[in-house]
Image (cartoon, rainbow, N blue to C red; front, side):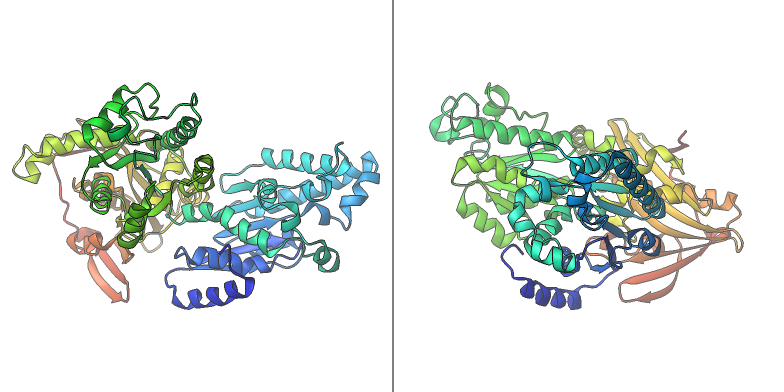
Length: 579
């Protein structure tokens, strides 16, 4: 998009709009300036990532009223430009009295309260922070205009809601430059302040947030070794000849890169190595080199051999049980980069720049690919969980059939119902889970909070543990109740790929149905909506005795009379209610 003209974006966006299917992701932009050019740019930016985005604008300078009108949008974006809160505030503010400023601040804060209250149940809100940068960047002294934006931003911070993310627009203006971000001709003639260049960058800047809300966050970063994690080739330069320390001119770059990788790992991103090398050489560097920051304890997966990298990366995706499109790979060789782009286009690949000084900056520019709206304790324990899984796989090889293996695990299911403390993790599960997900509906924390606190819903979440350790909160079902006609509907039924193959989904469904019976529910409806990744659960409801009512396109509808349900009663899975 960076090099496309606005007219080219308009044309390409129209074509993408014709080809995309699936549910719409509706975005409304509320603004006190003209921002209409952002609509197509943002649509195009998201449609390129297979999000069926539709962007519309509220009425000009009607943010308070429109926040009520468009509160059911999937996303609301707010451009509340400080200079246009009243006409000419950028120059009027500096001759206003303290009393006049206090009166203005009081009015704006009241309007902010109305807007945030109206949008409290909206799935996601992006609110641009107030800024004086465009008009005050040359002023050494702080003036009234500065004080107003600082006061309002401080107020926003006190009003933070779980569904609202504040966008620091000054960071973006600094990147693009003031000169390229604004066109004062159009601001003074028609209140259209920002340029096409700014809107392109704005769309890219907020894209990771929207990708995360739609389950498209990257989950793993994998590095080559030679000239990627360190300067030099360990097989040629030797153990003592490679550089990755701030004590050398080249080494400082690689030390910073390793710290950036560890920062991602600390946030729960899987870290791996895929390298054509002698395994013993790489192992020695990881274990013994005094300058090596990334250790085995940080690595979830490692493939060091002389096989082609396409095969290795495919194998790594399978072992991690994630899609190829969830992987970012960093490599120095042009041959390898082009080879992987040709045969594994789903993988996002970055090549180490020829100017090594640009390498850390390149990673920082793309670090938001791993952005997560919701973070949980499960994220922080991922490496440990994968190590536990390796022990399970070793144990599995000792058994000739699956049932005996499962019985040996001492599986325990702990089920939580409408549990407020789990809202962030529950939201994250809807955003990340693709394979065992019957409807693939994505929900923000705000959405889940509404379900959990409503007597019309039951939100069931489960934790799995076995003799090797704890998998964490890895399963979810959202059930809508209609007590008047004694029926219920399964809105969401999903399970993390980490616990697939252990039959816990059957014990979970047993528990849910028994719970619904206790509530007096007689009939249960459900559906399967086909996605690119959930074909393995296409017949889940048939396997559990649900009657197929309707099948069309990519969706199947079911119904079950609860009295006819036959429980699996898997005795080797213990079930308890979480408190």
